[in-house]
Length: 313
Image 1 (cartoon, helix red, strand yellow):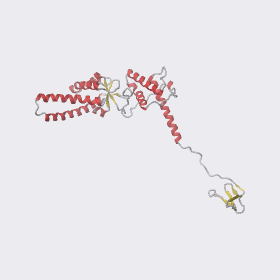
Image 2 (tube, helix red, strand yellow):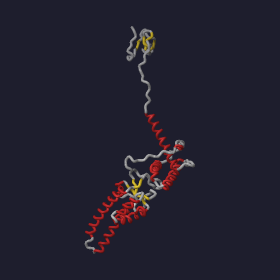
Image 3 (spheres, one colour):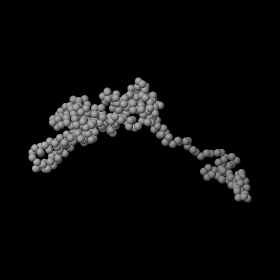
Image 4 (cartoon, one colour):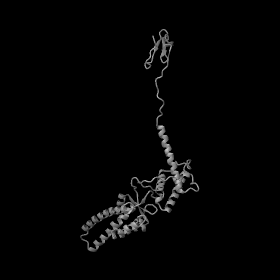
């Protein structure tokens, strides 16, 4: 699923990640970090042959902190919560309000990860994730972060809930031409996931999105209409307009078919079919031809080949 961010950098359409996917992501990250750490350790051992034991130990500790602590912190800060393992599992670290994390969030998570993941071989992290309602470990609790899923499995995509019946058709005259596609996508993602959000966050996001939508349409939100219901009603109106537009375009593209045409038949009058073209052309002095009645001197009777009928001699 593509990332959708509102004007306040709030990521929508996500759900908390659970222990199995988080454990797999951490395993991938640790495998990469340990590989880098071993390679750097071998290179350091070759380069530090002439150094004493104290210098070698100090360099080893610095390298441990740099790779196993500074590495995840730097990666999560620069990628805004996506490490290699989380990217492979479709996960991401965000703030509690859904916004992207900063350096301080990644630093607290990395420091706590040394204790609860490396120090206890992941036992404390697993217990914290199982106990937490949203699958958070201690590092997430202290940092104020949450690991969420960015990709929804196939077949689990949620539909936009319908608006209340008393709001259907109320915004038929609303001008929606100034609403950008990004705002439409953010509203749709909010409506499909609003029941998974905390009540306070859900209310604040609905108010913010409804204000943005009202500013784009030039019409304030009606008094007494909840923000979420207003968003659902406007999205429903836009879908209805799109359906009517597609139906009208399809109707115009279909060619109109008239009744089948058949050869006309006219009865013969005076021994000559009315469909026969009778032309009497006689040359004049000025080079023109004069048309006369059928059977006149010099006249010529022309019968269309398609009728299959010839006048009697």
